[in-house]
Every structure is written in structure tokens, then in C-alpha cells.
Length: 122
Image 1 (cartoon, rainbow, N blue to C red):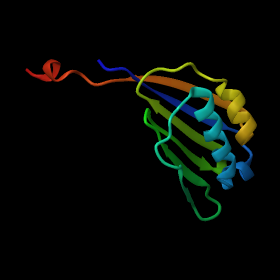
Image 2: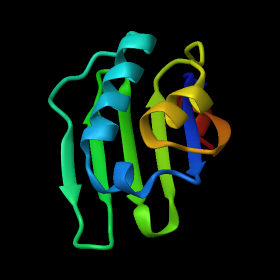
Image 3: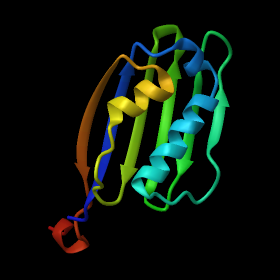
């Protein structure tokens, strides 16, 4: 198996204003990239939804990707980081509290991988 890991973050009790304006998530993305020494291959893409909706952001990394989906009407944000190898985890709760005002954060790590071609053959 080739290693890979996705970090699934669920942020609840967020500040609705932070979930309406991508500037909060842009700062969050910048801090994650810096702390984890990630390598973006292009600028982040952002899509804002009509009120009362939030935004979706996506950053393509040489390691894979970082994304966010916000729901200000629910005070909720979903953040996913997929990397081709495991990295030391930052203080996710502190980061999401500082940038999005999250009061509660759940963190799930999922190991991912692919089988070698020879292993898949019958």
C-alpha cells in the first residue's frame, strides 16, 4: 500500500461572518500551508454562494489538496486535507477557533492508499 492520509475536520459553533467571507478561510489555508510545509501548485479557488450560503474553497497541493465548505446559517464548516504522506498534526482546534470562531471541532484521520497492480490481479 502507498501511504496517504485525509484529515476530516468538522467545525461547529463558528462565527457566521467568518463563514460568509472567504478572507477567514484564506488566512486559515495560509497558516495550514506554512505550518505543514505544504506546496501549493496554484492559487486557491473560491466560490461564494448566494445568501444565506457561505463559500467553498479548494487549494491544489503537490501533496494533494485542501478544501473547505462553509454553512453560515448553521455555524458549520467542513475542512479536508488530503496528503500523500502523514504529517504532524497542528493544533486543529486552535486554528479553527482562531480563524473561524469554532467552539467545537471533531477530527478524523483516514489512512488511504492504493494497491500495487500485482496485488489487484486475480
